[in-house]
Length: 287
Image 1 (tube, rainbow, N blue to C red):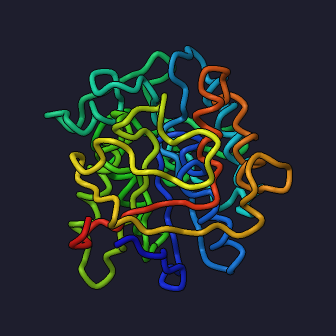
Image 2: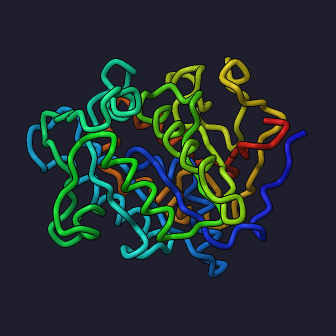
C-alpha cells in the first residue's frame, strides 16, 4: 500500500542525479520542502549534460541552468556540486556511466567528444578540482572515489538517486554505483536510499501522462523491480502546485533549464509538474 513520504525522518539529504534537470523532475518539491524546513540538502550532478558538444559551451550552460533552477527552490549555489563527467548518450551501448560501471579495468579512460577529464564552471569548479586542485580522469576509479568522498563529506542520512529500471544507461548505472557504495558503508552511519523515476519502462512518449496532476503506474514498472503500491508519495505544498503557472515554484524552476527544453521534449519534461512526487525506498521489503 502506498504511503506518505515522512519528511521528519530526513535531516540531511544528498540528491545524486546523472544530468541537469533530473533533480527538479524527480524531486523539485522535495528539495523545496526540506530547504524551507531548515534541513540540509546537497544536490550533486554527475555529468555535465554535454552530449553531442565538442567544447564546454553546452555543459557550462546546463550547469548554470541548474544553479538558476535550484535557486528558485531556495537552494544556494554552495549546496550544489558538479562532478563534471561526460554525457555520451542514452542507450546502454552509448552511455558513459554504464561503460564506466562495466569496465574491467578501473583505470581505463573513456574520453568523450568534449573532454577526457572533469570540468565545471570557471566560477564554480568541478568537485575533483575543488578537492585536489586537478581535474579527474574519465575512468571508473576516479568516479567511484569522488562519489565515496562526497558521501563521506556530506554525511547524509538519506540519498536520493535514479533507479536501475530507469530507461537511460546513465540513470541505471548511477543506481548501481550508489547502491554498491551504500551497501559497503558502515552499518551505523549507512544512509537510507530513496529512488525516483525519470525515464520509465513505458517510454517518454506516454509517461508521465501529460496534463494530469497525479502519477499513474507506468507499464513494465514491476518487471524492473519496483512495486507501484510500495511507492512513497509526497503531496507538494501550494507553492509547488497548480500546474504551469508563475506561482508554481517547481514549474518556474524547471523553466530555467532552457537547453533541455527542446521542442520535441517540452511536453514530456513539463509532465513532471504535478501536485505530487513519488519515490521508493530501497531495502524496504515491499520494493
